[in-house]
Length: 439
Image (tube, rainbow, N blue to C red; front, side, top):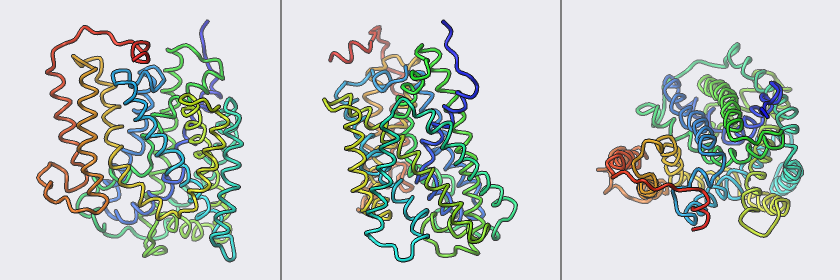
C-alpha cells in the first residue's frame, strides 16, 4: 500500500519541525551578531546560516538516510559509546541548557517588560507555569503535529512576518562599521556563533521524534519516512533562514536605538517597540512565548522519549522529571546559563558535525567501523582543547594548530583523519543493527 500525506499534513510536519528549532537561541543571538557585524553583516550572516540552518538541514537528512533512528546513525560505533553520546546530547539540549533557556528567554523578553517590579519570585513563578504548560503539550505525544504544526506555528509565523516586513520597510538606523572579531573574521565568528542555537544537536534527536510523529499519521515504510523527513527539513530550513536574515538585518540597523545593548533580546525588544510603539511589546511577547514554548515542547518530548527507552520509567514519567528539572535550572539566570554552555558546545559540536559528515561518506568508506571510531575520537580530542580555551584557561602553547586561534582547532585534524580513512584496507564485514544492539 502506497503511503502518502496530504499537502496540508506535509506543511504541518515541516512547520512542526520549524517550531521545534525556532526557540530561545534562534531569537537572542542573531540581533546582537548583526549589530556587531555592522558592514560585514552579510559575511557574518553567511557563517551563521551554515551552522544554524545548513548543519541542522543536513543532519535531519543524515538521520533520514541512515534509517530514522540514532541506532542506525551510530551502528558503526560500540553500543555503549553511542548511548553515551546520545545521553550527553540529550542532557545538553534537554534539562541542563537548551530547554531551561527557553523559559528564561520567554521571561526576559516576553513577560519581564510587562511587569512593574520583576524579581526572583516572578521568574520562579513564571518558570513553573511555563514548564507545566510545555509538559502538558508534551504529555500527548501523538498529537504534536496537530497541536504545533497546525495551530501554534502558523500564529508564530504570522507574527514573525509582521516584524520582518517592518524591519525591511522601516529600518531604524544606518549600518555602521563592524566591531570586535566581526571586523577581521566575520565568516568564522558567525559560524561559531551559530553553535549557540544548538540546532545540530537538536536535529540529530528531532529526527527520531519526527519518525514517531509520521507513524502517528500512518507513515511507516522506510522510503516514505525518509522522503517526508527530508521535505520537513527543507520547509524548516527555509523558515529558519527567513527568520535569521530578518534578525541579522534588524541587528545591523539597530545601533541608533540600542547602542550598548549586551544581548540580542534587548536589541529586539527596543527595535520592535520603535517600529510598532507601545503595542510592539505585545507583538514581541506573543512571538517569543510561542517560539520558546514550541521548542520546549519538542525538547521535552524528544528527551523523554529517549530516556524512557533507556530506563524502566515511562515516557510520561520522564516528561514530569524533565519539566521539573527545567523549571529549577531556569532560575540560574540567562547570562550564567549561556556562559556555562559555551565550553560544552565547543567540545561536542564538532563531534556532531563529524558524525553527520561520516554518515554521508559511509557508502564510500573502505572500513566504516574503523572510520567512525577514529574520526570521532580525533574530533572530540581537538574539540576538547578548544573547549578548554573557551573557559579562559591559557592554552596559547597550542596556537601552532591550524585555526586554533579562532576556536576551530578541531577542523584540520578531523579532515586529515577522514582523508586517512580512505586509505584503509577494504573490509567485507557487514554490520547489522541487530549485531550492534546485541554487543
